[in-house]
Length: 408
Image 1 (spheres, helix red, strand yellow):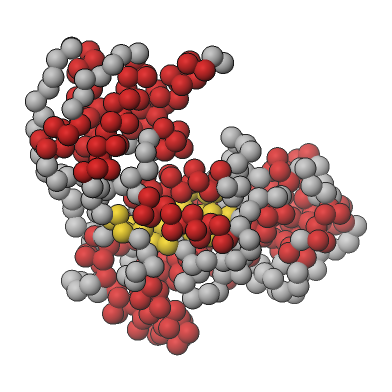
Image 2: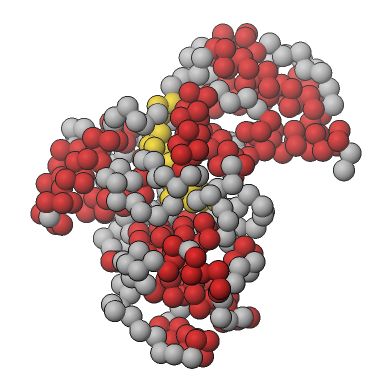
């Protein structure tokens, strides 16, 4: 492809992702990073992680529209370029983390690798053989709370065709009936399946995370990076479901040093989670949840939840503050440059004047205003007078029916 044409397409893709409000790897490459104070620290963690250490994850805090999602996209881009596999999800009605196995079914299939545009690791697994397994962590005794997912992975290399696809689907969280798995195991391994304990999704979900993380390393990648957006939506769960979500998030973030698998998690949450759910009001989770944990799961769970809340509001977690004028000028000038590359024109765009007119607002608003200004200039060859209305947010309130299977 012609270099100029390639640059033009990259600019168009980046510009359209900005219009949609969904930053992509392409847009992070094309635009300057105005959150270097955050990404530098995360890159330092990734550098430590690639050598086998397991740093604590990060919970990125920020107000609505200030760039939390863009931070996650930047981290995704960096992690892939460094050789990590990455899964990225946003919490919603369909995706929560109060049920760890249900959450796994969302993040497992979304694994992206640096050398493929297709989600998953099946292609990479197909480059390996069963004889490679003994040298991996997957064979380590008592590494997982239940050996079933590891046996599924082992059997994958002794099967082919439809049966192999069934086993891969199981590795991604789509459980196949135990009767079918026993049949596949017996026919491929010429032995009966022996488990010391039956697999229970509510008790043993962490084994799937562990096996997939180890499989990612087994395939030659540096580790598994999990990115979670919209964590503030946990505030809409019922009380017990919120407690389970906090416990699962605590484990994924490795805040109590329990994570023994090559997993590094970055989550992003709006500060309103603290304002609406953690302090005062109806819930006051930071003070009430440790007692709920003690009554439901014992003293250890209470200690973990207390540590979770202490870590969550500590200085280890970066905060997304309003961008500096210098950073905004760099960003908006970059957008103007993309617009010019996309439509083959030279914008006469005064980014400093736009910032002055809008005053103090969110990065998202600056971007939208810049795009609208540039579009009107390009189409009508005239300037536009900008006006801004304040965007208001609803308060979070507990809703027992917000997530499916809330009580599970």
